[in-house]
Length: 172
Image 1 (cartoon, one colour):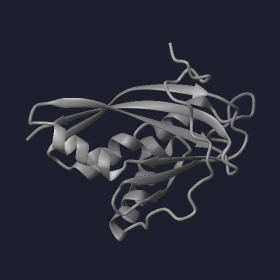
Image 2: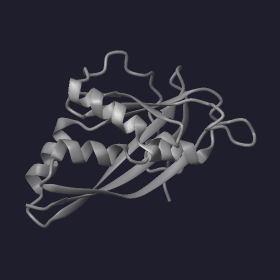
Image 3: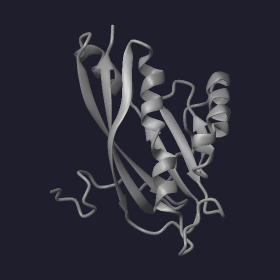
Image 4: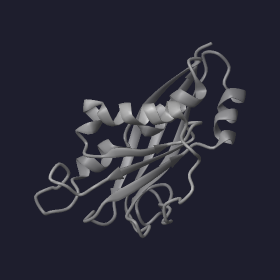
């Protein structure tokens, strides 16, 4: 069992949203439009707001709306998880390239406070992280990587936190 008050292995990061994320490229902007049109993601009610040109930073927005509202008037937990589910896998697939297989392996979601307004999540994969994966994995070897993402309101108050475990295997 975890010592964290949330039950997760790490405490969520209560910080305001980045004001100056790395710029989008023309290509990452097209990916953002496509991602938001994908029926599986569109159904979550969330939208991808920003994809950095190098795919190392993504910000999503999950508004409280008729699509995301539950019976008690807050954001449905399924929408919260679905909004963040594919992001780290997609980031690592884009950054690492075709020489690697990347799959979501597991997740632990902690609901901290009901979402009564728009929630945001920021995902980051540092260069050191992907370089470590490239340097340590030989062909056929795999590793599990863990990431923590928080869903926050505009003031940075944490409403939910999710630990994602992503499986990575070097194919070539």
